[in-house]
Length: 471
View: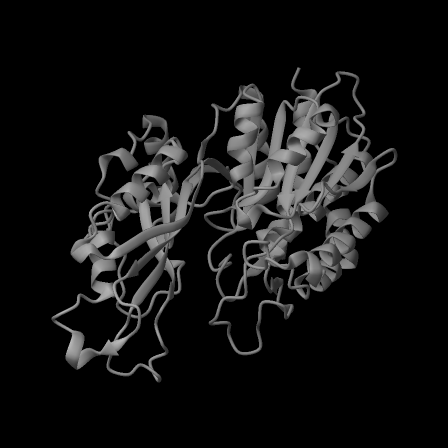
């Protein structure tokens, strides 16, 4: 592992160049292409790529190369190749992304998505934790190994710019770069979460996602509600009835059995262990209002709910005037953006077809119904940890955080992981991140906990060192 001198060196790197560059990065509104279709003409993505690639070039270990790869009109990829200091020909792949979620409302006074603010050792603003820090942590971890003259395998760093849109550009890049990447035996992903900031967390699974817009239309134009209500059905009521085919409104349970799976025993046991560590922090980390309770009191069940069970959220709506401008009108159309999280091992393409059929078949009152722009991202379940990696994670977490690691699934999606799992079935996976309590990725008041990022950087270096020494 790294010498004791590595910690102050990494701390100085964060203080001297990483945090100042992250501050500049947060100022750039480089929203993912799903949220900014004109991203190319706006230039924000190119500006973010230039900033992060410029920092990385100045920090690369000796012999390393960096290239910004562009395929046609696709979002760019930063590709870094760091030669190994061992002779085994092995490869480690490190992954992150630099595109961002949209602004979202509800930021505290003085904060904003493109307004970087330091409060103590937390950097507020969109994209710092999800996950602009990844390129900095990856390059700095490798720099620490070189500085301490600790052997490491060849390392490839890939930073994409389309993850928040489902990584639809990434397969083309992986195919294009495949001869240069080789066959990694270890994949390190820094785009996940952590249950607390007290220890290292290893993500063991990721849910998939079915997403689309439910459009319900009965009239060509709005009519007086006193005249039309009770005669023509409300488009919103029809939408509610259709959603009820998917979700039990009283419990939140997803009804179709085809959208659930049998949870592996090992994942149930890991959820129980994580529940012992977190307790009520599993739910009270969220900004709940006074008196609000979770859907169940059992912490382990809450973990399984957010990691292995399907769950539906309505994330957007069109066809509604503002409350101030809402007259007594029976609206002609309701459009609802639906986001259905699906279990890690469920067939995503089969799930999206099932949902589309359930929503569109035999609509009430002959309403015109369409589940538009429907798409799916597959989930992922990690392979069993090799003994060397299990030991390395235990030692790295104890050394850098003072506590053993915790294994737990995550409720979100990282499409790249499923892609890599299929492409490199013999690889080991170290999936982790800094998105802990209150960090609020995708929402208002997102922040990066700087001490956690520093410790995780050192832990990544420790694991890469253990990878090289595993034989």
